Image (tube, rainbow, N blue to C red; front, side):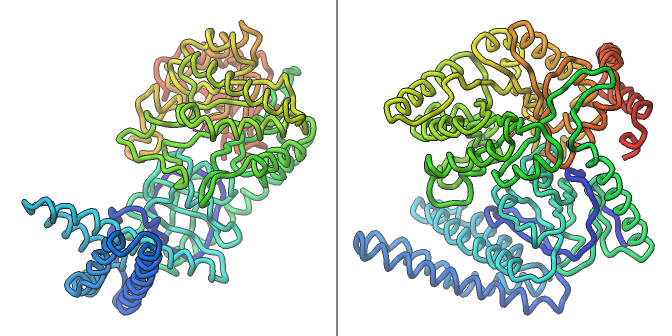
Length: 582
Ligand code: PEP
Ligand code: MG
């Protein structure tokens, strides 16, 4: 038995068998050691992937040769030669045998050696062959990892996925009926993979460094997604302990769900709108079942992932309308496309950048791809005829972006009017406040928007200069840092001064002690993942608004995030012991 620590990002306990999955997009895989009896299996997997890759390349070469002539298809002949290179094949098999490692790792070890050897050669022609090797390598890795994904589909029992990294698009593809929980080696608490764990409502842990070295396919493990603990090959005592912990979790969840139809109202009658964050339209049912008053953040970018063509206006209209209808008169805040950072849609071919979080992301992408943006705005407008829909722009950093978006929105409205298609002409338009410039100049933005939603996941990343994806610096990612709280206070004041309501939709609002602080600072709306929503409702219903204000006032006088966190923890204990113990 062995205990490992990671960052618990989606609550609950799972006990089951491991299934190791690689994403296939990178040659930087961790070393995964296998037991000697698995060696023939790994060699067979490698040979099978070679054969699949060869068939694929032959097929591409044939098609290209028919369409544009033999010469252009010669590049694929070069690819075939690399794939059939006996030295390369034998090297990989030797690494599997001698080092007792998985096929993916053996292949990446050999291919890295090739990259190194070629980059030292002083010959431009040969140097260029590196890109051929990389192309073939990617294709082969895709087949090796894809084969694992296919095997997952064939599995009868549910498994616990262990992966070095799961991208948001990989995670979005996980079939909940096959997966009990997931663990990754990298990733921070607010990475989108972590957020998806919550929306799948399965226990999840990220940043469990070197977990892949400790497990093998089929090994039993326990995942405690609340506390970020992984137990590999648990003994009977551990199984009993975590089973009773799981029962406690189920019981608490059951208790909290009884609040479903009650409002998020403090003991002295202050109402907060408590809404849910969703990624997929089919989550609308879970919004209702967890007792949310609408959707405070619909991350629409998932509509664009894992597909070979862009979603049409009708398809988007259909998805947005379904959510609006499902939540009745409650608001649905549709955030326009926020790709880039850690979220990619291969169909859009957004180039990999040196600093993707500071690059061509979100509204910046939309304002240069007006065609894609306008299609989405038209779909949202059309859906607004069926419910209480609002539009929200991500990553706003200045007033020009609001104005340029307004122009495109006006064009979309004019077109729909000409076409006789109904929509809500006075639809509310809001901005996410997740960039320091937007927070500091929120008085300017408030004049030209109807509401704000503070995106603390990104705001913390940009204010504290902490990559939200990086588990190595996750200890510095401090939602209670005085700088963050001062900015939130500024945004709320500026919003209110201009008659705009202000919400908060980042992950920190899903922590009951911080939610109390936000209430005390005057937040109007809180939007969180459905699974954590009942806890937040319970916290709000357990406190007087006047006391929350006093707590916020006192919290703002501390000098460090740690002191503030400790203070809030103590207050939560006084207010609601069961939430504090969790
Ligand atoms: C945020 O940044 O806080 C936010 C809610 O948006 P996302 O997590 O999708 O970047
Ligand atoms: Mg964000």
